[in-house]
Image (cartoon, rainbow, N blue to C red; front, side):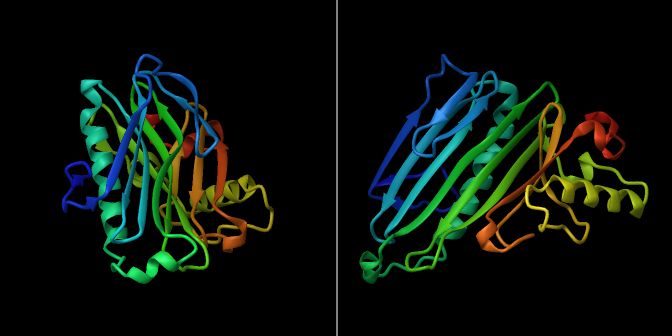
Length: 239
């Protein structure tokens, strides 16, 4: 019997493997083998892959999470781990053990994979793809999860922390810029709300899940905008 992390509710799994990356190579482009995705690892950050299998739920779990030994970042990474753990446990709670699951073409699956990892002196901005699949479903469901964090204040950065708008016109102009950023011109955001976003040195990218702005066939959507185009909408402490 093995337990994952130190989560709120312990989950029994039949087997678990943990594969840390080489801590001596803590920056640069690193290829994730199973996903064939290349991401840039900021200094002092490495990746850890955790695979587990629960036969009673016909469930495979794969987590690829950033880790660090830097003391100043421990709260941030602890918070991130607890958020991912909660999301995982919420998915597990939807699965009722059933022997008939073994007859399905594919079993239940929960996966978390990094897409972009950014760090500077002020912030962390991590973008993940979270993938869910219930045995027997027509297709999996994927969503973006972004973890933006103020290192100095030791707290998450919300949409209203990073952005500031003086008028409805400002909000309308942001929507126009987002719509110009989609690769497919038929995809449009038609209203303003607290968009999911991640930050890089020179850009801000807005991320949209399955069905959020387009049908499932279009997949997850992203719109990247140069920071200088929206500088007036960014809180002065993050410019």
